[in-house]
Length: 140
Image (tube, rainbow, N blue to C red; front, top):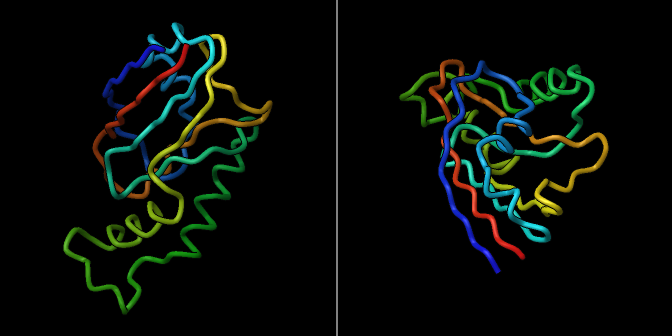
């Protein structure tokens, strides 16, 4: 059994949903050493999210952003946590709804994903800095 753990950063991205599957794989050279195993990804932030969804049609990512802006609006009169701007509390809520981690199977050094699946970073802030992740990879 092999275990690897690494932290890495993604560059700043605009608000919205971004396909980051290849960026994550490129940041994890140890993935190639796993024939059968798992990779746990943890996003080390409370105002962004990770999710797995459609990787072929970019309009899906745009629809995600439109839906979440409608579902969790800015400037709701009942928000009390507004110190960092109108997008801050909604970003925390979106992060909790979607989650900040993924557990993915690994086979022959690659993520096992469905034909139309990709890893998204949900960037929920208007002006976010880069995002940090921790990956823990284990397997044979």
